[in-house]
Length: 173
Length: 295
Image (cartoon, rainbow over all chains, first blue to last red; front, side):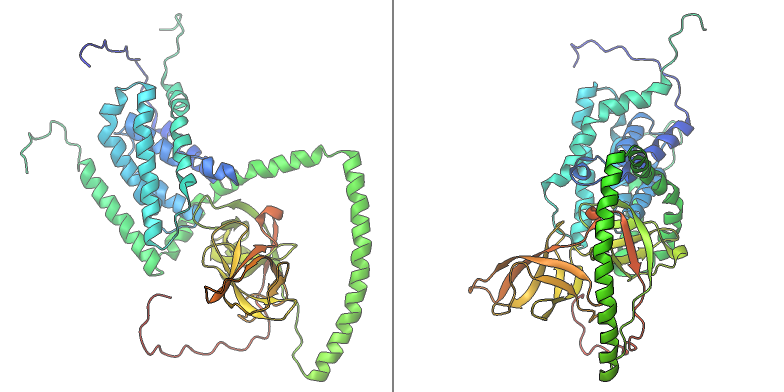
């Protein structure tokens, strides 16, 4: 990579903790929408996506406790075994925090290549827990949600960065 | 173990150590939830926390339906009205016939000295959303402990049985549908009177009858109703229709596939049926002689 010139970086305002909480609640709400039919298979796990985003962008402002308790809430909302999403989101948070320096340096398209395996791995953890509890394999369509989630990453990236961009007003100092 | 320089800033535990702690915590929760039944209070508390979000998430669909209702046309309303009055007439005639039959039935039952079968009380509820879980067939309804719902109650819609309440939160309850994998409903074949047990497969729209001998009389199109033998589902409610019967002499049992008649696709209004009155006490469990595998 030595030959490639560095891409210019934006200077961003610090993120407000309130905004992080708001986006997490928004993601939880999106997960609870009454999805059905094909939309249910295609719908990404918004909470996983937003948790991963904040773990990569602001690893100091979000921790395992947030990821874990969101997982617990998802388990209750879905009526599934308590702890499976909590475990999956904790692992996701770890991956995000461990990789944040690396992923931040990449362009959006390359970031997606990092996000896909992480989301798939989260699915796999849930699948494994379910298999241990005696469930059948639900078919490969189960993994579709992670792919749509990764496809939504640029949109999420743009939207969640929005309040951090300084106003480009030349008259204001 | 390699030696690293002491950190410049104190940041607490390393991410790996934190992951270990939370993974352990999750595993403990998983085992406690799967093997023992310790976590109901935790579930209740988390359920209360998430309740406003659940209602908010279900709101757009409700509002959409209301807006669509507001813009329904005069012609559509008139057509509806006409259809409903025709239906009403039909039902009124049916009701008259039923009244006569019921009277006759009461007399006959009186003669036989059979205890009268009484209508079960029921609570109306609305389906909020289907659980976002490809592994199981569950829906959430908008009545809970506050509405007098108890776990185990059967749930029906205007066509027939759709499932059973499995968990109750303060204002919501979770209904496991009859298509959920491993869910069993005792049924009766209306045509032959044969009693059997209908099992869910985990697929939407597919149920199966297990362990039916090859010679048993089942045909495509047979209607299955609840037999009421478990004392949980009231007898006589429609459940499913046989769609496919395969008899292969190579196997011990016939493979019989059925299609559920009712389901959350048909509408959002459901009835949670109350306990059946006048059931005999359940006999005390006899101590198991030998420990067997998990049931």
